[in-house]
Image (cartoon, rainbow, N blue to C red; front, side, top):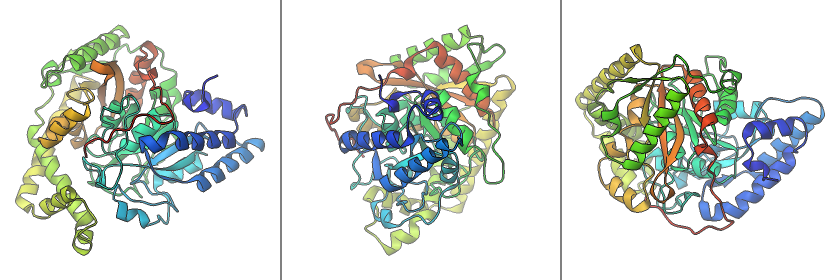
Length: 469
């Protein structure tokens, strides 16, 4: 019999509901796995055994009384370190901030608790949601292959799910930070559209671009999590997971725009071949593939970088002045750069982003969604990553960041393996507030393919390799 943490979320949830699996026993099994695997993988920055067991005991008592809260009742999950959970550190990837205990839950944390989830702890991330981890934070190690990048900035969330220490996890995404680690760890990841999910209690990276969303092994699992966290502070939940799970192999009428030129700007045979095969699968399921034009994002990408730099400076400049040693040298330079940006440069950046947003939205007059890669080179190994981080960040974010500029929902789906088993993923991009159609298409794709089922064989103590940054 497989370990319960390796079961699909729907099957695990049903076993819990029918009282075939105890939430308390499941919580103990998850904590045991964390103890076995995380010393080498570094996914967690804080484990909360007391809170987790209290939630599991409550879930078990409620089941005994005939009360089932829904698909996450008794299910072990994790939270990225920038999402507040009362009583836990809220470090945002900055070790000195971990001493500060959150006084209240973020909106999404409260909704997970209301849904009966068992939150095992906080998950490691890069410093301030940047590209690199703080020098005092061990970099999460990719459980598929320790020589591969685990992604940024929600790296701990991706590793924890891929290694089976949690069933799903929440991350945040400003320019790709859910989609990229999902791709690196062969997971499904949903970046919801702007304002779909409440962000109160999220340590901001760049307000106006930040979103919170789930990472899991399948689209069906994503749908279960979205059903619980859906709804911004001012809006009631509107997502029905049955509309996704009932989709069975038919995408008739769905129009998917593919810009072959844009999708192959960095020639990578593995990515090209995997996306071509995925496109053929979608077409075989009834989708109509539309040859179209993805607007040039270069000026807007530069503008987004400036706007994020200014937002980071606003968030951290006071601490930078009061505690000069709190941040790494790279992150401190970024704060100083953002502080020094002129209003004229920022106004031009906003104009470029607005023009690109309009051009991208215009693509939906001829299509229902857009297909691109997530990363231009598939998942880079650590040697490649060092070279990429030394260059302009636009190269790594060419496909993910433009979608954030427009505030659109996007879905990462595993779609192949490249050289040395590197995961390759595609990105489906939808209209504003059209997460349901995105997830339906992704679920249909996963009913006819098996890439998402290719889980790592994690030893209790795998070989540890420290990624750059």
